[in-house]
Length: 135
Image: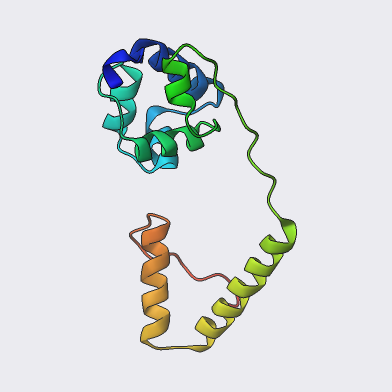
């Protein structure tokens, strides 16, 4: 199947869509949860990604599932607008986080240190930050 697909056409569409979204190859790879090499290979018309990888890239480009194959077969992709966040869910999540942080603020022990280590790793920080007032 992959030999019958127009990979060069796909490459042009992916490069154009990534540019329209203002993304670098690195940013697209991060959003899709793939390597930069995977994005490069797709954009150069090289290797054809597996179905799961194609789906992740389609999602990161705000295309429907299966659009990469449709493009390769000569059809057009159908961009989908990212869903607006459910503000009630966002507020609930923020209250939940606030509760966790209140508990951690009161915990002088290992649990607090582990949470801080996790947050530093999550946000890519290696060193400590001076505490804010009241923190």
